[in-house]
Image (cartoon, rainbow, N blue to C red; front, side, top):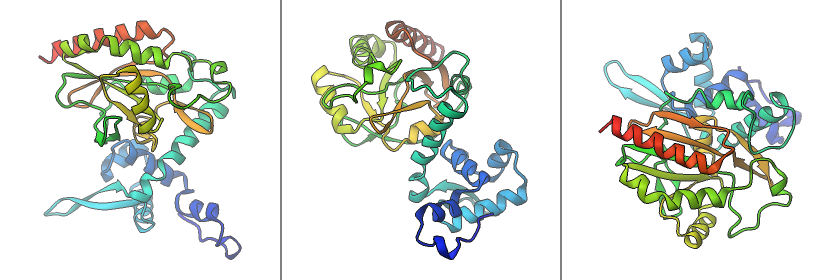
Length: 295
């Protein structure tokens, strides 16, 4: 359980944060609620935690205002646990921990925007098919917020990319990081094929961690017809445990492509993406096949 903060550390924000979420189980509970698991039995099953320990940790996280305890059933009353505003603000911390471990614990320390076929992050991403995307929205370059999954389409292709160079210059040494080059090309290829995607009943969404105003300026210049979504708060990244890398003091998404059905279930993943034109062609074929299967 949480430890009391010693008097000498009462003004230390790191110590105070560790007292709230420094416990192994508390961090994993936050991870799982971000992934859409909100009920006691779901959390216990996924984590393999005892009921006693889970009860204690949930009570602590509710008391610390990291989770909100929300009734979902009456007679008897049953509750689910959802991230509060304070809990959601922890997501970039969790993603930064994941990014650090992917590079320094599970990887060889190299800075890269891609991954080897047998890398831990590749294996993790390829467990996504069959996973349902939690309900969430992200800021869109068109204004307001949008669901990454188009509810009116039979299938949605979500392509994640590191960053485009307009309107802001890319960080120094960007082109030296393996896997970074090609974001503008990727957007253009999806743009040029957009009518074909639409005719097949497949929606397209682009996602990066750039700000919406940056995406808006890029979309205007390149005449991008589909929404570009900003995951600056890492809500989608945390929900799917997507791979990232850090450049220019920012977490950036590694390039990958997801095909998601109308029920929000991930059906196909392309990662790593080493041939961008082929990835776009494959995404169209997979999306079209999925749309035809559900017609």
